[in-house]
Image (cartoon, rainbow, N blue to C red):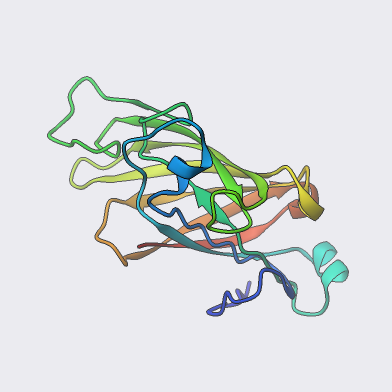
Amino acid sequence: MAFHNALSIHALFIAHLGINIAYLVHPTTMQMASSLSYSSSFAVVVVFLLLFFTSLCTAQSGTDGYLHLRFYNHERVLGSGPNATVVYAVERRGSTSGAGFGNLIVYDNLLRQGVEPDSPIVGRNQGMGVGSSVAENSGLTILQLVFTAGEYNGSSIAVQGLVPVAPLQTLFERAITGGTGRFRNARGYLWIKTN
């Protein structure tokens, strides 16, 4: 199975069928996006997502089978508000982050067309993570990118994989394990870079 390596994310939709999704969270995004006041926000996260689709999807899109999308995940510091909950393990093992071993994080974040807090909402990033490493701060995440507007309304993309607590600019990867609707049987990988 071949994957397309998309380094350019300049266009929101590129005429391939696969997917390239970028998530950004501006430090003031959630403060401006709501009338509620929040004391902090999550670091900027950039995600490049690539999907490989089955021949059924390829027939709809052209010869190479890839579709590139770009959107932004708006997220606050985990556990700081109504969009996220952190359940800490009984024995915290010295970690103060939500990714500590045994900790459970459940979240529901907005997906928007742009980084601006008032840009149109295209869906939600709904999922959970559990601190899964005793030796380091990392967690296994399982999430669903649920589209609620636009041409992919009613479709979703399933993603899972390890997410390390790492320095800024670290690039890491998660697997696309499937999808629903227009993304049925999607396969590929998700690149995440924290900024």
